[in-house]
Length: 494
Image (cartoon, rainbow, N blue to C red; front, side, top):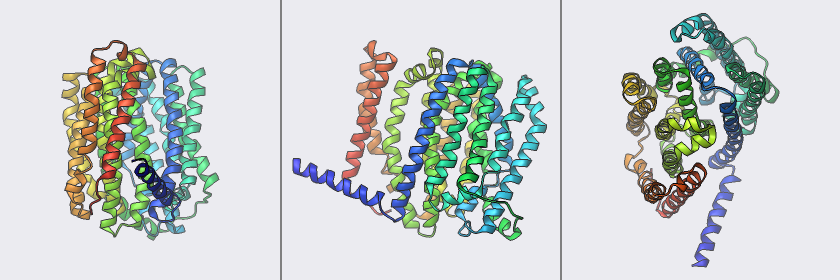
């Protein structure tokens, strides 16, 4: 038995070494993913620490006001999304100077238009929510869009060519600098302006770093290159707006139904799970899109990549969902303070929705890599419609957490539509895709039941620290069991 175990460990080590140091697509993806993962993890850890500090320095009203401003400004931002970055990465000619220059002019033109629209409409946002401070806040926060549009397009080329170290320096380095600015400001400005200026400083730092790491000098655009990139962009029409309605409809509605303080509690609870979910989605997008774009004409290979990524996501994600559902109140109390524990139900639904959103996003990257972003439109439009229809009655009937319940129902419906469509595009076998679910579901449930019984009948274990410790141990055990069972299964062709 000991000999078999030793050989098993040796085989895993050899496979990992071959992948990590290999020059093939898998090796480059893993190497890049390691860089992006480490940088993003460091950034998100700092953001989480910042949030723990800010929730103790600032009133919930500040977070509620910032949530409204971000949602309202993002609504206008998404109406003119041109997808310059995605078009540059997906296009085989994306590395040429003409296309790089065209992408910069598209991005800066879009950013300037958005800022002008928001500057003019800011008073309308302020009057709608009955808060005069929102006008100035919106105009300051929206400056971040100008900085984002002015980022050096050579930074996107670094991502396209899988030189992820440079992109991590620009993207995550700028985020970390912005977080530090927010923390410093919050020590002197105990109000929402610390959040607004800090948010704006993140994209300002990214913009400066992009020209330091990936130098670029704008030149007059080439009309043919712009038309080439716009072919991809046309497929994005409406997607960003539908995504915004899906992801922010709860904020728009709850901002009218509840006080700014209650909205602040809700938004910070949801943000607690959106931080790691955003981390995963960003890393996957930045590695999956370039990787899948390289094999865009090989459906079998695309399917294998998609199955592998989905399987790993489920092995880690399902135990994580169980952990958050069972320990949500303890997590919020420990992270933000006692009063945030009241919105733990919203956190649980948000965690379920985040897992389906990650899985949904993986299929979307396959469509983008194929140069067919429009195939994602049916799914995201359906999600937007479902949320818009359900969020108000659910919020009235169930309270704050009704907003996240509406989002969860919407993302499940959209995800099912995505699965049905990818089958037609790449020939993916649905039976193989669904094989990734039973094992992590079974192991998560097997661990959750005894954990629930222990905490139900033991007051000491319900305290935040022991509660989280037991939940974390149960989640890791479920993840390990699922991985061991999955690893021993024979591989099937996609």
